[in-house]
Image 1 (cartoon, rainbow, N blue to C red):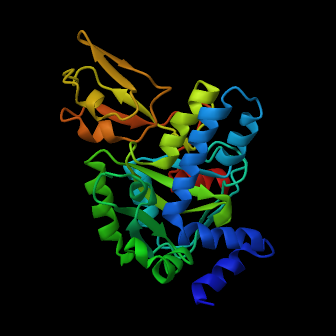
Image 2 (image 1 turned 30 degrees about the horizontal axis):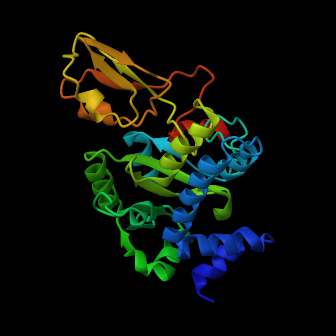
Length: 299
């Protein structure tokens, strides 16, 4: 048994079933997400009339999901130099899910990148495909030993930020992924194209069944976008940049749909006039995965 495999089993303790699930999840990463998306499509197509579908979608969505990150949030996570073990999120405000809700990053200075399984599932994926980043051990070691078919390679913090910034410029958002099979904690930061990402696509499909915004495999960052009207030129850049239809400009009027906004910060970065900014208002809603803020909340 390879050393990284042994450490994965040690991580899960007596839950050997989860250790095996963890092992298979990354070994067959691309196949896993393909099956997950197909299963969601089947549920939508065949069982939208069937009430127990609520249980099925809840079972899946409580165990595999993501938290949207602002650029500042992801930068803090990438630049960590010490092990962080926080949670579970008993407030249900940072990671609002029942089972996978811990922030655990062991030796986060170790980083690796490999091909995104969601993109590999697509016939014509956006490029580059290398956009999934592992943070910390034993995950980085496991990827390097077992996931060579996904073109995995070790990277520095500087390389990680170069990848992140390059992909953000092409409309990718950052998400921290949590999964029961990986110990209920995070460890993967993905640069997600909303058209390729299985968690985003599955959410859109599931909402066709449930209706509304009350089911999701990804949680908004917790920020809202604030506009300085004195600087805004109504140029439409923010509306064109947003991948979630949170901004609409029509007849010289800008409308911001805060319920659709995920707080990814892409529109803020794209605004050439500096009219937009992110703001966190502690009004009892979601808390951003700002590691400094989270430490105060969960310590």
